[in-house]
Length: 106
Image (cartoon, rainbow, N blue to C red; front, side):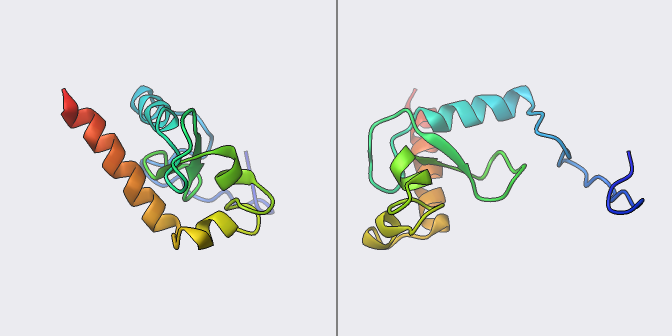
């Protein structure tokens, strides 16, 4: 299928063009959704916010308000983020830390 006026960009190795997730990616995203919000600590389930589309291992656990809320959310005015003095990289760090704590618990 040709895109962009007849030009089809090459597929970058390891990054599918569509949203098909591998079993490991599905498991990781599912685990992130079981975490509390990385900004306000609201209890799970959480949304999995993608820092960059199609990068399944850079997802952040966010409650609906911190993710999509018009006033508080990342896709809104980001007031919760300002209150917590956080940026995406800070929230990603919290998420990764919590995932590692879960994995190393057993």
